[in-house]
Image 1 (tube, rainbow, N blue to C red):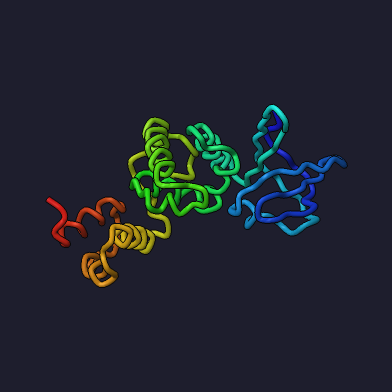
Image 2: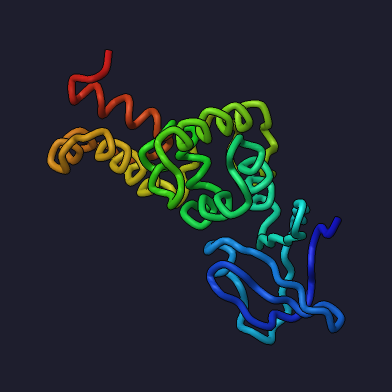
Length: 205
């Protein structure tokens, strides 16, 4: 099992990279997120890797962070989700964004991933949410404890996530702005802001 590669980056696209390790060129499948973080060709790079062996092929997949590799493992453990679809999910969402999508059960956002339909989106969220809830240390220090949505760039991140969630529920931009008026998101989780906003909109208890 090849757990990581360290060598010279020969070339890269948004879906694959070639790394020279001791004169051997390894081609690895990557997400757009990892591709965006790669150094220029000719520089040294280290990728955390996962090898997948099927009946007719051996494939390597690489990730800039151990957190992304861990989520790749969790994604391919979901029924009908293969490596390519898992990379599509990781290309659409950062680790923190995926954590937010899953914990807020935002199936509409998950379904924006190419190749992910409504049923697959719901299944992904259901299975990953259970994993996040049980594995507090899923991705080490990169994510908050299970049950807490990441705040990101503190206040603006919370409000932007809440705004996107409200818009995805069908509320107009005007209704959304009104519902969030007066909140700065400080020391609040996304779900807390959403609950307060929905109450203002007459949707909460």
